[in-house]
Image: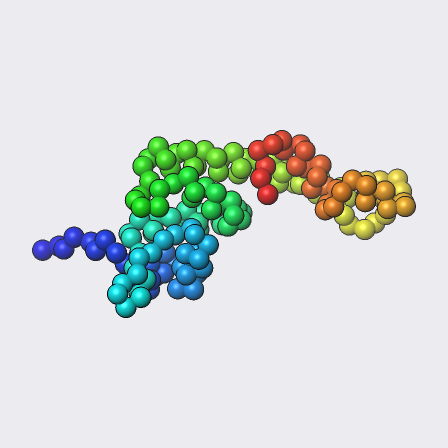
Length: 159
């Protein structure tokens, strides 16, 4: 006869099920991305729904989101239960817009790969980076190409 699943999992079980290390579980807890309960002997016990939050963290990291961006997304989800379908849908819609913006930036990069994106050639005729007198400093920090690509991608791109 099958027993019902336990509602709380030890940190090692959570790490194993999520495919991450125990220190990573602790780190995500310290960052407020997941929550645990403490036993009388001060051992961490995690609710089962934490596995879903860890899956979201992993997915966010795979698509290039920072932990801060993942935290913002998780901030809109309940910490005391698994999210509803509509709560997941709202979160994923925001991520979808961010991913679409990043795709547009990558497409702009792809389109410009045959040109100069910072090769150092300093050709006066062809290179868009040639920079006498360090005029590019007036444009601000970072890559000139990246600023142009972000401008073409629109406001959906989040770094």
